[in-house]
Length: 414
Image 1 (cartoon, rainbow, N blue to C red):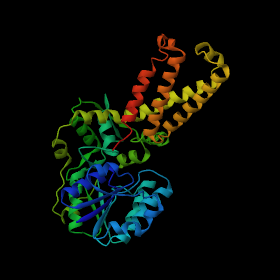
Image 2: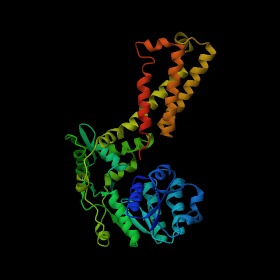
Image 3: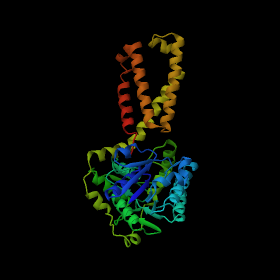
Image 4: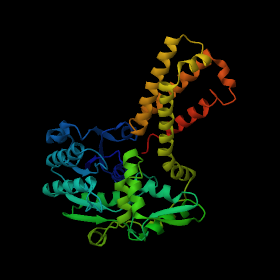
């Protein structure tokens, strides 16, 4: 059948789109950014669900003629207006435009008092009102990773210790993304109205799951560190403030309560049989790219904050260093030196603040490269002796450029 997949550029969305296409369906992949999906061979529907035009059923009707609908779009963080637009208004419009099978993918553990959980409950209510099936998957793993699964890999790959929250006995029964895609394909072919949960057949504690991932990565044994819940809460708030990605209140709270799905009722109605976590980990060896990703995942925010600190410190020096110091190093007229020092300080400040907020990381990385290269070239012309400075004057710009290139390479997580 023809299937419109909303949120097809997400981690789960891509896997479901590929699984449906492999099952022979005609997939229309919809997302805010569709260029990668188009290069992957999908027909695409570009749609930013925060925009008012996507809140009108007329926007979706041309794409849903004789088609089924699978909604995987959702926000982890955002403003109330963004949550309402994505989880209610756009979803309501797409559901109203669809006359075929409709399936909304939600999440386990949305009873918590967080914006993520509250708006997930709202989207479920919209789906039920439109007669759509609602599917709550447990923790979704795959050969690739994103979000929570990337965080678990990163924690498993830490040197010396493996952190778990609280007792570490929280239950998880992960499902592989391709197995989830097979379940969704079957539900579209043979709709089962109502609310369903789906996970794998094997349940593990958080400790066993994290250690299992460490063994899969081929890393030596490490001591389990049971992180006190108060420290996890403080870390989550700090992560929210600094936008540290995997270290956030929502993510850590989800790990603390576990992600366990009651699979028995749905499996009694369908023929698809998801694999257990042990079978998933044994199905392929971890490669160097898996180990690199696990180790770099927590280094990514550290690199960003290090660069932010460098630019903020550079801005302070540009504003506060006496002009006499510049004149002793760089042969420039005092008015021009003042303009360059204060103007450079403003540019440095802008980059530092953008990095703190993790604003447009790719563009900011390119701006950093341009500014450091500009500083290096300009100072080479004006004061070439700085290359011979025993404290590394201009020489230090070379590793800084390399670090910015790493930051640029890590900008895309999906």
